[in-house]
Image 1: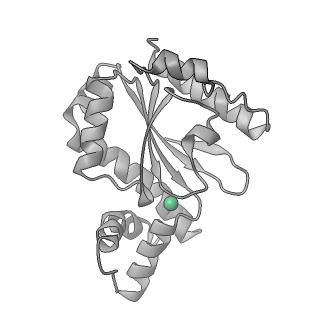
Image 2: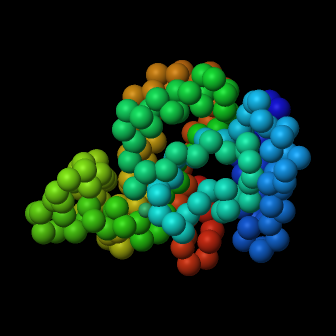
Amino acid sequence: MIMTSDEALRQLLDGHQRYLRSQPLHQHQEAGWRVTLAFSQHPFALILGCGDSRVPPEIIFDQGLGDLFVIRTAGHVPDTAVFGSIEYGLEELNIPLVMVMGHERCGAVQAAVKAMDTGKGSPGYLGDIIAAIMPAVAQVKDQPGDMIDNAVRANVTLVLRKLQAHVPVLAARIQTDQVKIVGARHDLDTGEIELLG
Ligand SMILES: [Zn+2]
């Protein structure tokens, strides 16, 4: 199944509308489909999202087995394993759509805002996650409005830029219109996905 980037985005958003209406199809979850996929996969979208238990992409977009290539880390912070996973998704699976999905009240972003306020980081690897989000927090600290939500949005934009800077095949395929990259914010209250420019 070869899709264009626009068709892939449409498929994702159609599934999201079904989820919002509480009319999910739960397609591609039956045994027969599993057998069909056993020796090959053709996911149409790659989603880098947060590990938060409330934002699983397969549920939010009403997709099933073989549909989405999902990478999740706290605050959707990318490291070299994430860059390599994206290379795999593009070079081996020819995925036409990459989405970075942040969400309202992200705990990782909240921790980064707190670290900025108190001047204290976190011990262990959590400190690395906070350090990675910190530039997004610094960018919005003087902006009006909800600082955490502003930082959630800035963190999506920051990661979009990082992926393009660190994954050459992604930048090249965006350039040639083979791949579209989009940012998104998931609203925990309404369940809605807002695409970020
Ligand atoms: Zn989160």
